[in-house]
Amino acid sequence: MNKRLVLWVLAGVLALAAAIWLLQGLPDGQARAFVLKLRTERLVGLLLVGISTGMATILFQTVAANRVLTPQIMGFDALYMLMQTLLVAAFGIAGFAGLPAGVKFTGEVAVMVLLAAALFGTLLGQGVRDIPRTILTGVILGILFRSLNTFVGRVLDPNEFAVVQQASFASFSKIDAALLPAAGALTLIGAAAAMLMASRLDVLGLGRDPAVSLGLHHRRVVLAALAIVALLVSVSTALIGPVTFFGLIVAGLTHGLTHSACHRVLLPASAMIAAITLILGQTVFERVLGQAAFLSVVIEFAGGLFFLLLLIKGRIR
Amino acid sequence: MIRISGLSHRIGKSAILHDISADLPKGKLTALIGPNGAGKSTLLRLIGRLEPLQSGSVTLDGADLSRTPTDQLALRMAVLGQQTAIASRLRLRELVGFGRWPHHKGRPRPRDLEVVNQALAAFSLDDLADRFIDEISGGQAQRAYLAMTVAQETDWLLLDEPLNNLDMAHARSLMARLGELVRVGGKSVVTVIHEVNYAAAWADHVVAMKQGRIVAQGSPYEVLTSETLSMLYDTPVGVGSHRGRPLVLHHV
Ligand SMILES: Nc1ncnc2c1ncn2[C@@H]1O[C@H](COP(=O)(O)OP(=O)(O)O)[C@@H](O)[C@H]1O
Ligand SMILES: [Mg+2]
Image 1 (cartoon, protein in one colour):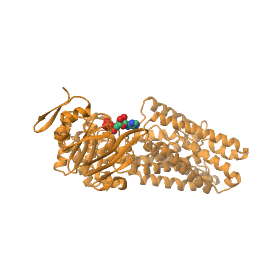
Image 2 (cartoon, rainbow over the protein chains, first blue to last red):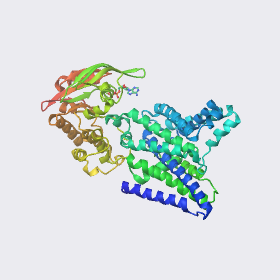
Image 3 (cartoon, each protein chain N blue to C red):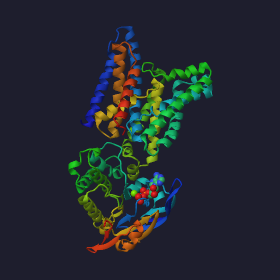
Image 4 (cartoon, each protein chain N blue to C red):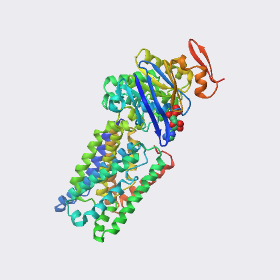
């Protein structure tokens, strides 16, 4: 299919999904405005999560030159949560939770971007040569961050820990509306930066040697891409908590639908595919199945199966 | 001219290159020969700034490699490494198109498409242009990488064993094309060559390396002698002559 056409079709489906989400079964009378406001807030949240998860995964896979890894598999979200806990530990609830949500969140994201660029820049600077070892390293890093998180949590007093722990479960239905303005601004910055880099990302995707030969500032582009990934993962982790495999499904669908290596197509397509999945999934789970199951659980399960499938079929590049 | 002075290189504890100095002439086809592990690829990668220089210096037509911005270098030299594995899933035409990236930085103009078509035609890849690179043979892929390198339209071409995977006919036609780029196009080519007879037949200048050192350099007649080659490869090698060029008899 024509690549531009794919984008337009996705945009159409996304608009349709958003309309269904907003308008289906809207009550009459006084409740109407209230329900519509709630739904709009959550729609914006799901859109932001979709954009950030989709783009972060595509960016990360380009840096890692690999289609099995996601930032979450490599422990980005665990790093974000650890950093949150450390900030609470350092400044206490009063200093921390007392801050306006937007300010606190932006500060956290800034720290996260620096940490992730330093850490994963060293790990992935040359591109991934030994994929199994990199996956293992990532899984171990993830476990390390999670255990450190629990450890610091235990050292904290219970009240402080409760503040942190709230954030460590994935849920698509408890999006904190107070975070939306800051999350929106950060997502837009990240998405715009990624789109501006699209052509350099295409070159990066060739692998290190050809990229250097073509005059790409390889290290600079890798670090910039990882910083954007860190920013986007922070946004989605702050909004819905950690989800490990969702990005993998999105990236798989994106490559399957676009058959393109061009980031001007891949990035927006992945964002829209992720948003459509979340919005339609959430509509079905809340309104048809009446929350009989959680979308996050189902997506994680499907994503996990997809991950295994990729590994078993040896399609790890 | 590429001027290499006092170049040494280590990987971990092992010294790979020892204090190498050499001038690679401009407007010539230079062949880099030597046994496996001599350090040919390492030297080529250092000149092509695929690895950072540890000590010594390299200048490219007077410009110091470590002080010239990498994107400007990409307009002056194109490097094709020995092991090319492209990570993205690309069609041949897209791959060759990347050769133009240093010129257009993501916004191809008509001239860029023209050059890509010429490069595809020059390596007889027209029919394969819309295939994916992981769906063609090794030799066809090698030709695609070469087409991409040539499409970069640089004064200097650095190639590491470009004859890899090529059959007789394509190998000869590649050497002829490189010769033409040098003589007609005014380009300079530096290429690692595994099979010395291709160096004997086509090169203007030969550099022989062994154990991280240059052991001989000069015209094919000066370097490709029975004595030098026997020493270089630690095996008796006879040298005859064919159409006024050395003919190396290493296979009998
Ligand atoms: N990553 C590495 N670690 C250690 N030694 C290496 C590495 N890469 C290459 N070498 C060694 O460097 C030497 C030169 O290698 P190379 O330049 O590839 O040789 P050539 O291309 O002439 O066959 C060889 O002895 C090789 O074993
Ligand atoms: Mg070699």
